[in-house]
Length: 351
Ligand code: NAD
Image 1: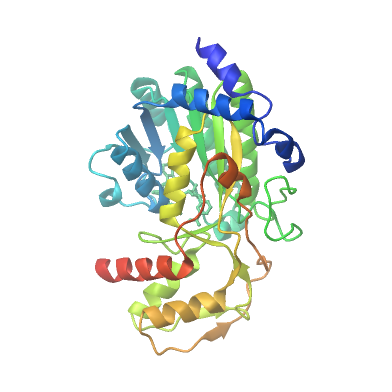
Image 2: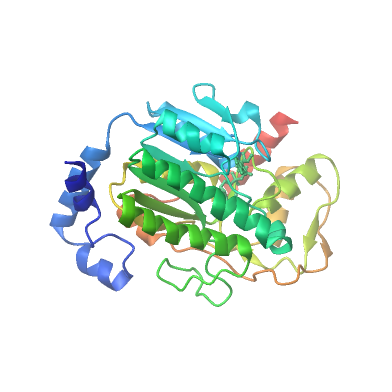
């Protein structure tokens, strides 16, 4: 029965296809019926293992799964995460995703779904030490997937990147079918893991949902990530220090609020098929604009100061999320103004 359901749900009309093929299948009622039936089989209370569940995004995703009635365990080595961010209802395992301990834990705990957020997520570190990055982001992921394959796991939701996936040559906003040409080892590792997920689907029937996040910002954020600039600016403003804009500040990013990213994970859990989805707003915002908005929200009088541009920094970035809207019924709901206001308020509270 499980084999039949998996075959049914991994039918070739899945949305990893180029848009022109998608357009052919979207109007088909048969596809919507298949999605509905698939969702029925995927529904119910799940045992979900969240890696990186003490971190900025993972902790809020774990919390949302608990609130939706699922059983949740978290694996995190607390390298950047915080123990107090792990939601109270989740079982917590202080362990490294690369370790034999985590491998054995998956064998014992037997999750049905793996939601993989643990990562070395600094682009800068990945450039300085590609081997370290690959050890964490590729070998760490494979350790989890090998263990998952032995317990008949149903699905992996993978926190991939959109911001570091498409490179400078891609159209803006980028679509999933645009050529992935990551410029840094961090993006290369994420793309490699996306490909490995295809292997685990083919060999072990595990359904992969790859969520390519834009630049995620919000409460609990640290300065390391792809939207780290928001956290860095807020911390400086609140400490009455001078934030520095790298270069002219006209480089753009697609800033997506963490609450919207959590909603994408909930939708991905429900989604019965394999897929790759951009999770962004489609809107480009330049760093100078972010500075000025945060300056106002933080009530700071510090005018922008510019430092040298970062060599090799991507000039423009935004993601087209039409596919997620169509198939996951997901779209960003929180505007940048609203999201930044929430974020500044949350940082003030934790001061
Ligand atoms: P984060 O640093 O807050 O979270 C990562 C968590 O993983 C931390 O709690 C850390 O302690 C844990 N971790 C790291 N290495 C580990 C290991 N070897 N074993 C066990 N735990 C480990 O970062 P985040 O911003 O919440 O990112 C979560 C995921 O989303 C990452 O995979 C990241 O690549 C991806 N992502 C983030 C953004 C963004 O803008 N923040 C954008 C695209 C993708």
